[in-house]
Figure 1 (tube, one colour):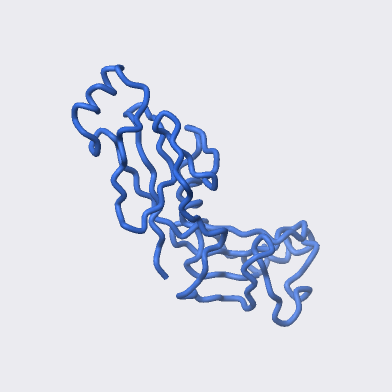
Figure 2 (spheres, helix red, strand yellow):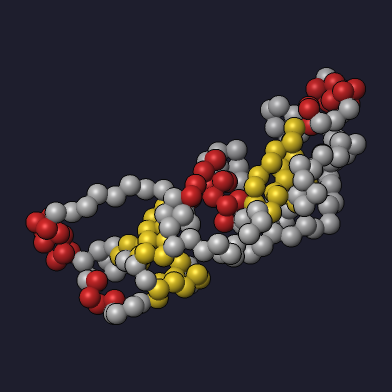
Length: 185
C-alpha cells in the first residue's frame, strides 16, 4: 500500500501492507519477496480488500498519526518525532536512584531492539554512564565493598549540555545512568 523511506527501525523503510483480514499493518526492518503472477492469483481470493478498493490517492496513517498519501514516500528532512517529546523533569532521587515518568517500565528481559526503537521514536540518542567510570574512586570502592546502598553522592556526567536524565538505576555492574540526547532536525 505504501513505503515510507528510512522511517522504520534502524533506518529501514516502513512498509504499510493491507493484510488478508483488511487490517493495515506497519512493517519495519523486514525483508519481502515478490509474488509471481500465478502466486498472486492464488492469494487474491483470501483478501477482503484489493488495491483498487483503496481509491485514487488514499491517505494512510500509523496509529491514526502521520498521515501520508502516495505509494513511495521520501524521507522528510524536518520530520517531527512520532510520539510525545520527552522533556526534562525535576529530578527527585530515592537512595540516589531516579526514573523519568515518561520512560516505559522496562524489565531486565526487555529486548534491546524495543528499547532502541523507543529512543528512535522519541528522537533521542541513548547514552549510558556507569558510576564505576564516572564517580570518585573511593566512593565506587565503598559501593562495591557493600558499605553503601545510596548512590546519591554520585551525580552522573551528562554526555551533552542538552542531555535529559532518564534514569539512574542499579545493575550487576553497579549504578548506571541513562541520558537521552535530542536528535537535531
